Image 1 (cartoon, one colour):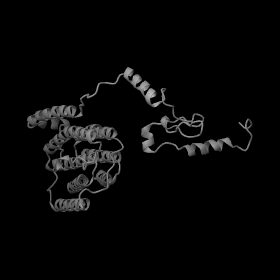
Image 2: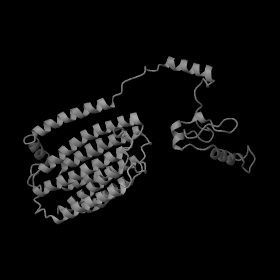
Image 3: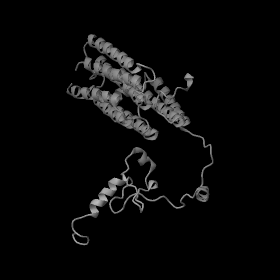
Image 4: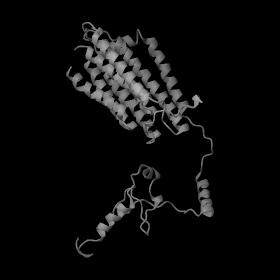
Length: 254
Length: 99
């Protein structure tokens, strides 16, 4: 029971955090906390097999899948605060709370009788006992599950598959396009400038400086610029100035 | 060990998941809240399994997990497809059938 009273507040807090988390990644990590705590509660309740399955399947596989999709769908996936139906949020919270209150009050009033416990059922080990039921009484459901998994795998493949609508761009075509751009628009032929002011930084979030002191836009990734994590030119200039005007004349020191 | 606290916790988690499904707009977060609800019901199943002294509840929880895994795979593939065509993961943007 100690484990329960430690984990239960943690789980409720994490679940509530999921409701308020702005970013999908934070929600996924909070969900991981809830799932691992649940696994421990399964262990406490004499279900070691489901404890392992919960960690392997839920936290290991399903949550990783969620994180992958968050990664693919990208940073854009922010929640809009605008309501499409007026009063929708207030009403859903009210209905949800009413539902929860009814459920909790109802459950709290019911007496579940004496707890028998699983010591008898688990006498020869939890896994053999589960296997015995699964492969005798529920063997048909188990077989149907395999059909479901195959269907799901095929469905995911069909949904994720994308037909190639345009021919694949070859290196020769790219080179030709580059020459064409140079001829028509005067775009620079060579590679993009590398990022970084190498005397002070060499990280990708620092734009290269042009001779006139302005930043070379093409030297940093578009993604970093969109996120706003790029170091600004005045910031770099200030640092360079700081270095440039020491009290001691140059050549001394060191 | 009493069963009531476990069932109450399961009910609370289920409610939080339900509120999340109703209020959140991001399809991925909505999906996570559905998973939370499934997990909450699993906790109730395992608690009842212990209270009744047989393993049928654990078998049921096992099948819930298997079905949830299949559901997540297909659901996330659908979210990916919608995102690819509409450039958005918000459930409000996929409203083409309305018009």
